Length: 141
Image (cartoon, rainbow, N blue to C red):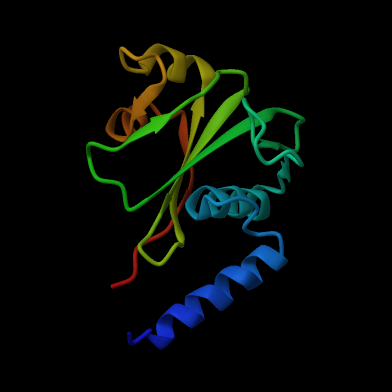
């Protein structure tokens, strides 16, 4: 079997990101969203990486749930396991794992817009009900 050298590069990159504390779980995309928010907004990430309800504390001591998707399509949905946080930041990453858009969504908008299963919020609806855009860049050409 021929193993491609790119796979070693990926493994080495993941190991380095894990050693630096950027990747904290097996969810690369979610961990990157949390990392970017901590860097951009000076959030303190929850030490318990599997905490239900919130992922970080903002500079005003509010609990923040961070949801991240990479290049989502129109049918994509975000799952909420609880509604304990003060607000949510929804992070969209590019195909290169770079943050493209970060939306702030207040808790009552989430609660009022989850689907019939009471835990899923469609990305399209999230974009329409976002309280505000807190970060946005243009994609690479």
